[in-house]
Amino acid sequence: MASKPKKKAVPVTIGGVLIVVVLLVIRALGGPDLLSSPSTTSEQATSQRAVRVDPPAPSAVHEAPARDSAPVAQAEADDGPWPEPVAADHSEDEIRRLIDNQISGEMVELSAVVVKVLPDDDEGDRHQRFLLKLNSGGTILVAHNLDLAPRVPVHEGDTPTIFGQYEYNDRGGVLHWTHHAPRNNRQGGWIELDGKRYE
Image (cartoon, rainbow, N blue to C red; front, side):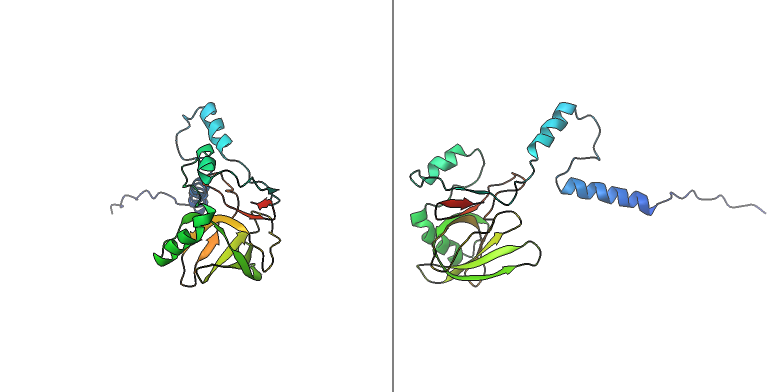
């Protein structure tokens, strides 16, 4: 009786699969690439680590910069490839264009009156919420991330200036990303009220 040759099976362990998954997740979240060859010099590794900056504590309240300078001057000083903020006197027109064309994802600057302060949204990242009234009609929700920036002491009737990312919805839209960029990988936003900038 001839015996059949045994097939060699590659043992797949849960631990091995788990290690690969963890390495891929670390890489996807911006961590070091632990799967590539170790030919990276220590200088390259140091420069890669230097780009990652720990986010500042959410107590980033600063004196607001003087409003004399035009947004163009601010954009020229910035080395980022980001669009310049919309000038405050044209901000309503820009918001109206985004609403009318159902456009999302653009960074805009807006000064408007707070008509309602809403309860915080505590699901997931905590957000301070309030509604701004547009002169052209309608409202926009501001969702300010309290895990990344300090609370703004805003009340109904206040007129904050907000620089953030606009997202369209059928109720007028949302301004979010009103805080610093925690990984310095994009342009941050802010809210100014009574001469103080909250970012």
